[in-house]
Image (tube, rainbow, N blue to C red; front, side, top):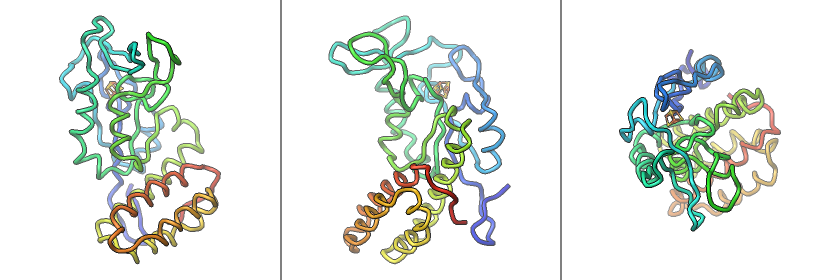
Length: 249
Ligand code: SF4
């Protein structure tokens, strides 16, 4: 199945995904976490780019599991469960940086929840003083920092119909943004992009939409690269408010 823009057939949008969610046996114990919503429903819309950061940094299968641990300084590190001195934090964060070339072309990313590498939020943190479930997987954290406008969700969110529909909407919007960039972004094309989405933006978040219009008003040719980036971050923030109905197109 392909995406359509008007009557024009385009290739499927590419979404990054934790490999284990796609049924690949890459977990520490040689298992996987195949997810039917991803491999079934979402596969009809998107092409997945599978990636396992722990495999990428050479941990192998099977491997000693890892966990997040809070140091006395409150800094959270990612260490082996059987050897606190074996620290994977820097390697996993560097791994995310090393994927920037393909990450920048993605329209979305689906991460495995609760993983010390891939979890987006609420990952268990052991030791020290502080909340027990306030960690973020090291690879996911760095990826989201590098691309703050990239639509991201964990697999359990996608079991919720409204959240899944919202994710699909944001991914499609990111696809239109990439297409805008490929054609060459200009003040005029940015304003046209905004006009095209105005109705849905207003239904999501009227105040947020006003912020977008302020960014556009302040944008001149010399400020275009920076303001286009800020516009996209705010645009995706507005769309994530899921009070809204349908997207155009
Ligand atoms: S959660 Fe991430 S690191 Fe762990 S097996 Fe899945 S893809 Fe690999």
